[in-house]
Each structure stands twice: as C-alpha cells, then as structure tokens.
Image (cartoon, rainbow over all chains, first blue to last red):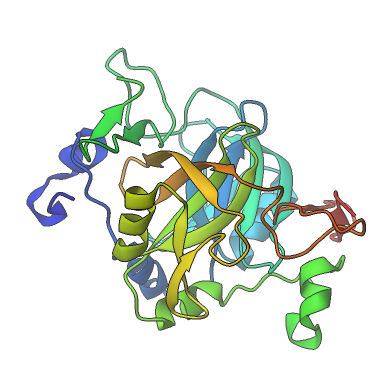
Length: 144
Length: 144
C-alpha cells in the first residue's frame, strides 16, 4: 500500500495508488457525535454509492424529508446531500441490520453519480469507481 | 425510536422496535485498532449483506486468501467469516471510494444468507432483513 502522507488529495481521489486512510474512524469519533454508518445504495442499479455516517438529527431529517441526509464528520454539521447542487438522493427505503448498529439507505438520485470527482468527459460518477487489482495492488479506474 | 437499554438482544435483533445503537462507533474505536468500514455486497444479487470493519491485517488476509475477512470489534480479533461455519464469502472484487476511507467488498457466499439470525423456517438470511416503516416507525420483517 502506498504512503498516503506523501500524496496530495488529487492523487488520493483520482490516482492509481491504493492508500487507505485507516485513521478515518478515529477522526469520525473526534467530531463528538454519536453516529452509525450507513451504506447508501441506488434503489434501481443496487450500486453502493457511498458509506457515510448519521446521528439522530441526520436520521430524523432523512425520515421527515425523505432525502438522504448525513452528518458531515469533517465539517461537523448536517449534510443534506444535494442541498447546494440540487442533486438530492430521494429516499426509497431504510433497512437496519440485526444488531441495529448500521443502516442501508436505498435511494434514487436526482442526477447522475454522486461523487465530487468527475470523469474525463465531465460526467458525474459514483464514489466507488476504482477497483483494486489483486495482482498489482494498484487501483483501476472503471469510469475514466 | 425505542429505548434500547430496555430491550434484550432477541428484541433488538429480531423484533419490530427500531432502536439504533448510536454508540456503536465509539465502541468500535475503543478496540484500539485503526479501521475503515467496509460495505459487503453480494456480487450477483447486489444485496448489501453487512457493514463491517477492517484493519490492515484483516485486509491483508482478505487479499491473500480471497475470502472476506474483518476485524471483530467486539472480540478484538481477526474475524475470518466462515472459519467456524464453513460459510465463507469468496472475494470477487474490492472497490475503494474517492477519499480512500471506506471499502466495498463484492463477494459470493458459499452458503445462503450470512446473518446469525434465522427465519422461522430455519433458513439463513441477510442482516438487513428489516425495513423501517416510515409511517409507524416500526421495523417490518421482510424474511420472517
């Protein structure tokens, strides 16, 4: 695995080097909120779009407004996906696991993919657009 | 939402009361490991099977053996899914998100569902077998 501390955000977000941030959950906790992870899945294609975090207020907002809403652990504020771009994720279904410590949101995106990165053609894509090549240990871009 | 502290594990895991464990991530961090969340998805049906956590050793084991392996944050040990039951999750694909702070494993289960709970007929099922009813706030069992 590559040394993430030697990479800039463009290299992390769009490059071919596999450099996981294993400190992520500690940063998530540092925001001081009580949170559960949520896997967000396209209700039609079943693609996983993002793994995010919700606290009680993000969940309440999601259910009241039927749009996928998270807690931004980096900005430490409510993150209503699409509030600035208009690309809301309409809520179709919420599922909970046996132990009730994680969620699945099934959503229908108003626009294309939900990632802030774009393909070379400028098209929106999903966050999981890179696959790990087991032989080389490098990331392959599935939507360049 | 129901008061989880008043419920036993059977009620949490198989009942109709929605009672999320918002303290989950704090417990995850308390195990002292550097972890990222992983959404595990059936490679064929695309159902989300579980959201779990991996540290470096769990990821290495997963890649070397091509079976989905996690870090058990409750037992604080490597959790080779299927090691006792034989119900391994064969690894098909690993994807990483833009920020490289979460994973998706696409897997092919050796047996049926992967949840430790069973349907009334004794059949295995997936962990997300309950859907939140937006009107009542109760959980509906989709695989009783």
